[in-house]
Image 1 (cartoon, rainbow, N blue to C red):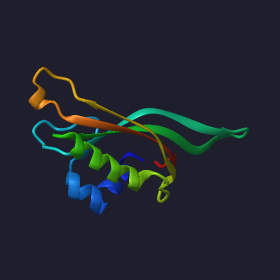
Image 2: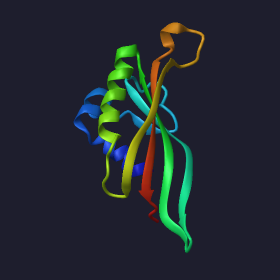
Image 3: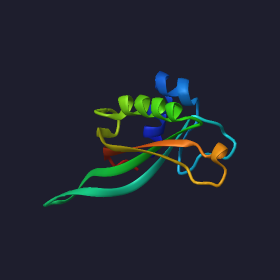
Image 4: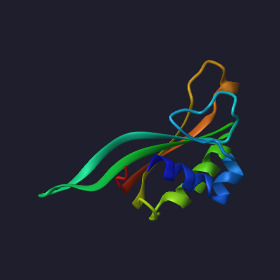
Length: 129
């Protein structure tokens, strides 16, 4: 799911026009520039039937869209939301937008603190090995 989701975003013309290849899991590489997106797995649950695991999981993924200005972060968030909300394909059975919030990254120097728009998406996917 992680590799597929990242590839899906990098393969979208609107997202890549804004972020280039700066879509990563876990952290934004230091010095990599902005705008950028950082994906984080917040939680994951498995689906079960009375016969046991169904092979489908539901993950809550947070997508932090970072930019040097509020507009940069927001434009990337809109592009990513338009790709993911309602998407289905490959191992992804369904992706649903679940919420958004705005803020700024921490730090003591305002000039170095990127703006952030965070999206939460619920990803229903088939577990593959």
